[in-house]
Image (tube, rainbow, N blue to C red):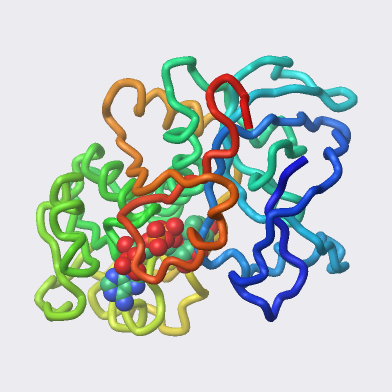
Length: 310
Ligand SMILES: NC(=O)c1ccc[n+]([C@@H]2O[C@H](COP(=O)([O-])OP(=O)(O)OC[C@H]3O[C@@H](n4cnc5c(N)ncnc54)[C@H](OP(=O)(O)O)[C@@H]3O)[C@@H](O)[C@H]2O)c1
């Protein structure tokens, strides 16, 4: 089968190669998914799981990409809950071969059924962004109606979903990003937008929650904006500075079939709109990873069309 693989950690995005790989094996409780559309995270070539299995052993050549939408073609031993021919979407394991391939093996519990009227390229944009935004805002920061949240990277994959979920719960949303991101962030529901290159973060005042999808200096400078009792959620790294009277949290998104189902229902009801900035073929994966200035939202790799034709 056709797949994108990486072998050499030092090669960076230049090491992403279209390769012929063996058809995957369905272990217990797995399904094999015929991948129609795949999502990736720009920095995943730096993640340990891209290179090593859970025991820390080298697992190259490995297939990146951890979001997918496709069709179940095979069930592993003992697998229940999904059937052959069913449309599904969800997350693949960080330390196993991923979704930038025609077929991949995934634990069934990491996937949710996908309604026939949701396009695979839209569904593939939802798993990591949707679950990360939900878990960060509500499970970790306990954001509620009437509170204020500052979303750094508001036009990005995760940030654009966070803005929409926060608005729907009745929070006041301040989005940040680059100048070009202003219209996207305001269009998604942010009440205010700050251009991080020109605007002063201190003008934001105090907020209940900082949801940071950028990291680095922006993360450090945001700790002082957290109101007493508030929370700073960092997606990129464990924070080295804590808010004076608040909490700072770093977490890695977890699979959650129930929440994926809820996110898909919101999408069908028109309450959630994942931004698909570009759809590219598998052969253009390396250039999709390498793009210096990216389009808003997620870049999706279309592996097969709706009829399953590669
Ligand atoms: N912990 C977890 O479980 C988890 C889950 C998902 C993602 N993440 C991490 O979260 C981060 C965001 O992921 P994503 O998929 O949302 O990425 P993304 O789509 O690239 O979104 C990041 C957004 O922030 C903007 N941005 C970055 N640096 C900026 C700066 N200095 N000034 C202004 N705007 C800036 C980007 O604009 P440009 O495109 O113009 O640079 C983009 O709009 C990544 O580091 C990812 O690895 C962590």
